[in-house]
Image 1 (cartoon, rainbow, N blue to C red):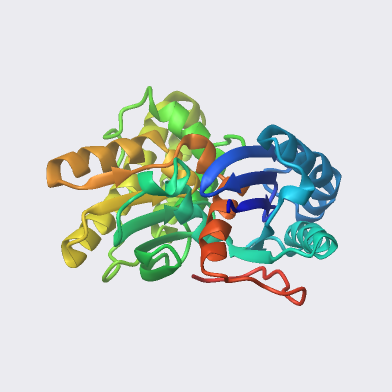
Image 2 (cartoon, one colour):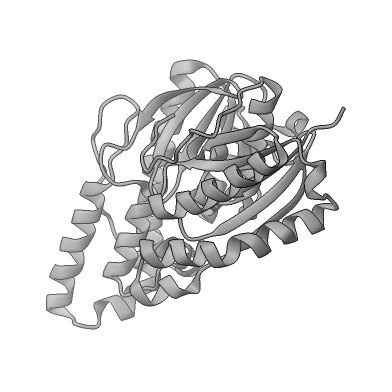
Length: 336
């Protein structure tokens, strides 16, 4: 008998719904929120209000595109956390109400686990073999994980301050670039010299990460140069972006390479919003070819927050009968 699951993602500023049947993605619909661009970041209250407006039409479209009706559903999944509490409440309340009305299981999903399962969205048989390493890099999280089964993940290293995506966004803001800054930095870097400028490289033990020092060094560098030439950023925008991107990618690759050497695991995936960065993808593929890794990278549309990855996690949980009850509540902070 087939298993059909509707999943809802509402952890930040994108409302998304997806349908997965027997581990195969049937639909994935997203509604963004342009309102935040004018503020240079996500405004929580505006985000939760927009989720309330979007969730019904987004779910309806996801079901229509999948060719599925509500009575066909075997479970409803939602992002439990981490994320903005008001936004999470919208998705969880809708999912709980639908599950209660249909008397079907409800499944709360850890958003970080969802990012890892984006590696399986071409179908479970096309994902990495177990065990594998996953470098999760996003605006709020940077961590290295050893995955021994789809629902068992051990954190080998994590950021002790800023995340990689946060470093991209904050440094982009220092350059006067729009939010989100990561994709803009990536685009500008295509025409810049990545070795024109040098910035601080952190010295952190083991497999942990740090990006705070890089951010501070970038700020002081810009401050000093702008004193000499007020138009320094305008004249050197492409080289600044390329040099910054090279530094962040080098930090990530140093730790990933060390993790492979320490564990002996050569099945390697990257996930999260920063996994869409062109320089990081190229570095992982190049290093993998040199060192004999088997590399897995999600499609760009599955690197940002999306319901497809949440629903795939729910599928793995459904197979193990890991259901929740109506008392489950969202959590702004969650770890793997």
